Image 1 (tube, rainbow, N blue to C red):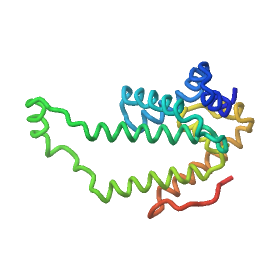
Image 2: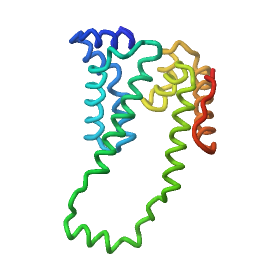
Image 3: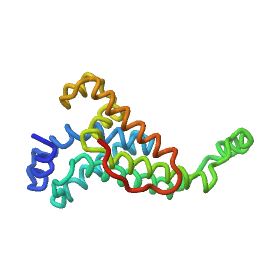
Length: 194
């Protein structure tokens, strides 16, 4: 069953397809969530939120693009919601912990300035835009190699590409991401890279 078929079956409320969805998408969703929220329990929460969102909104997926792009966007949004919730949640600290932090405050690095945070956000947006501008095959290849950590041989076999083609395509995607990270200003829309 293809990724498109899985999403369309979920839209029809086929009860078996959530298991198929989790087998196909869960490892990548968890990897992205963990990279963003940096906590396994929060990443699990994101996976559950993504599964529920896909179930609720599968009928809105038109199938014009790779389902992974749609699921990736849902994953990013769910991860950002967890981060916002965490930022707004204030926890009380034990007095001993506060004293220890106060004693070591001179050893702590200075928090990032607002302009540094703004530039980091812009860089992230530029890189995401650069990745979205890649053709679907390159996006899938990048995801398999750099997010799932799969070998060139596995990716070559699954995508039907030679190993030199896998290396060349991955190099182009990474180079595009490096250029986007180094650029100035907000992300610019560009044409799809081959």
